[in-house]
Length: 177
Image 1: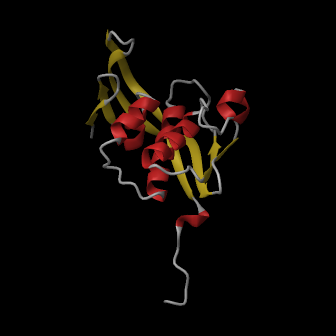
Image 2: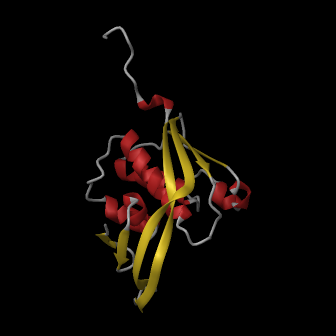
Image 3: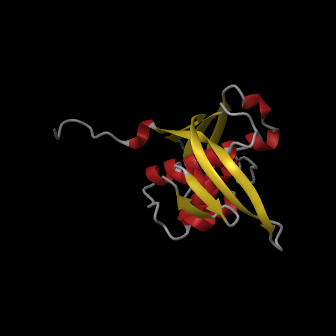
């Protein structure tokens, strides 16, 4: 066995980012900071986007798939000021871990943009999960909730990817059978 190379993540990692379906969504208040308090029951579908992450000498974001042409130029940018949630998640996690985001991420966009099914949030959550796996950062890290909140209120639910009741601004999650 010592003569055979060990399997590594150098080939890349593929993550499915399922659509989030709100079975109900009630706005129950508005906060002084402009955020809304909500009560929602969300489940996850068997359709979604795909994220593929592989090592690279610098960060790159590539977008393909049926809805790839729907992105504005600023959403296709790979730089640290990109408005794309995948790029924002990668850069934010790399900064938090004090490292370079030395990966190429390919987003296969199968879900329509701004359709209300959490596509961007699911993509950000899948990116975080994949990079934390690749970079060996524990999902129990105390800074993870704040990082997810900076990306969007749906990201924590999308990272769990299971039926959930969301309250607060989406940051208080209750597991639903």
